[in-house]
Amino acid sequence: IKPANLIKYGLGVVLIMTIFAGWNLRLRKEIQARKRAKALAVRERNLAQQYLDVAGVMLVALNTDGEIILINRKGCEILGYAESELLHQNWFFLCIHQNDQPQALKKFAQLLTGDLEGNHSCETVIVTKTGKLRVIAFHQNVFKNSSAEITGILSSGEDITERKANEQQLRTLSVAVEQSPASVVITDLAANLLYVNPKFTQVTGYSFEEAIGKNPRVLQSGLTPHETYLQMWNSLSSG
Image (tube, rainbow, N blue to C red; front, side):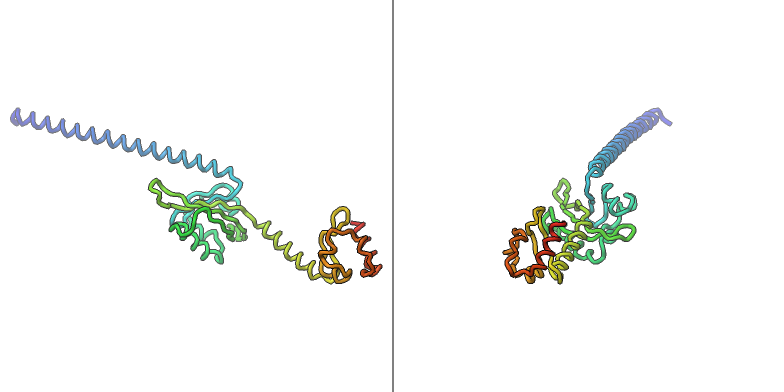
């Protein structure tokens, strides 16, 4: 091999090694940058999760496919699942009662397209891991990326199951009192009438408006049989 060729060959090798070293350096920097970005993303997610976990309501984030990408501790408690069992699962088919699925999916689609304004509220029946039904009052809003594109939905939910049950019991009791064949009254501590049912007005001859706010003593007008008055007053006096 001629000396000139050896020099060219050596220069070529040096050039290749220099290019390779530069490429390798850039690659290492890119890998390190990606690792730092990934670590930062993990730290930010963990920090966000900590904030979410201290909330006293269910918080659920969904992507545009309806998959759970984040849920807080309260949400897991209500649903009875571990976080790992919920992440990447379809929220609607796993957690929403089948009777509420069509309406929930419709509103989800409207939120994503902007046809339904954010900060939307609704009541939805969910199904826990054990099959129990819970009524949740949800407040929903969209979240967007840096290009202002909607990338998902964030929902906060309050469990109102017991409150709804109590409201139903009150409605049932109200109907029972209104239709009772016996006189029913509600008074304050001084025995002044706060409520009387239709049977009371029928027996005493006083209308609802005339009776409210009065003490049963003034009802001794002769319209009420003496025995009825005594029985009512004894009941009120004894609490």
